[in-house]
Image (tube, rainbow, N blue to C red; front, side):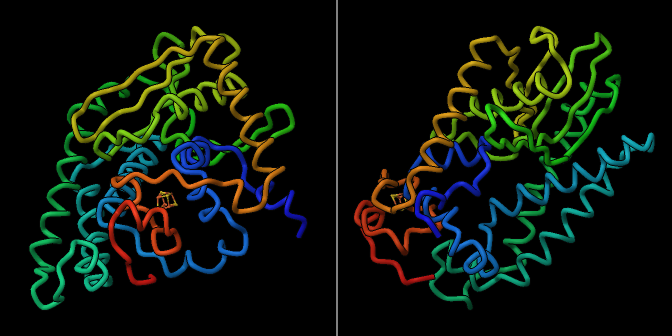
Length: 287
Ligand code: SF4
């Protein structure tokens, strides 16, 4: 393979752009083509990441019911999350014990840990039903959880919003559920701008009629944005610049490390990264 094409396979997305912004080396490891069919199947998501995935799937199942004009059910949603989380902890007890620094699997209380995960998931789902969902009951369903790819200046862009609706006033509303705690390394603006661009390209030519929002299932709060022409210009510029770099630079030395204790200690590629190991202050076993 020609090095200059090494990252041409990576469509621009808010998540890829964010990984690249946080640490170019992490981007390199994550999207390196020779790795993509190898390590992934072995990877066990962290309990926090898996909880977020399960809550999202649980909510998506209920939104699908709503799309079919069926009633949504809190109990069905929480039962689904409970079953999935129990299966996860049972299958991965050893890895989880290791991740939470429990040196001896014998001392890891799997039942108590599972109950705590299920309780947290239930709290997120309840808050969704009681605080967040009432904002959508009079909206018209458009789409949910569908992966969409479109081109900007001939560069491929991928988005997957959790829900698209029309409000009673006719605004096009793009919503993403957020289950995680606030992450100081994340930049929600990129994702919101990407959704705004998608809504503008695919559904709504008038920017003033687009609403983009992040609904936090932990607190019931919303981050809301009405995009401007400047938002659209910025995200388009970012897509062009990121893709220009990704498609022209394939060697690892162009993807520099950007170590910091918090992000490196949670990085899946710490075992391959000496700069990360230096700031974390440990020499981890290869995973
Ligand atoms: S360990 Fe730190 S510096 Fe290394 S790739 Fe991960 S985030 Fe980047």
